Length: 110
Image (tube, rainbow, N blue to C red):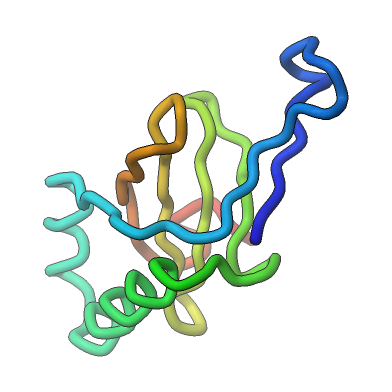
């Protein structure tokens, strides 16, 4: 389970949090699909396995983490030792989109 406390950023009461316990379905954007197909077959298989894992439960930090971006809530999930995928939920967290995948540094991770 992953708990997000954005109350101070949104001027909401401290009890308002978002709980992410699983992500049952992830829609892959066209840019994501294109990038995924250019990656090694092993990473493509790991991504499929990761989607299955996320449908059952969200792993702990740092495997799954919220990252700061200018385009809203974005989360990063480890896909193999050197790769990460970025996911974005819609406004009410009912739909999730895979928006990017690549090597750590390529995805903005140190």
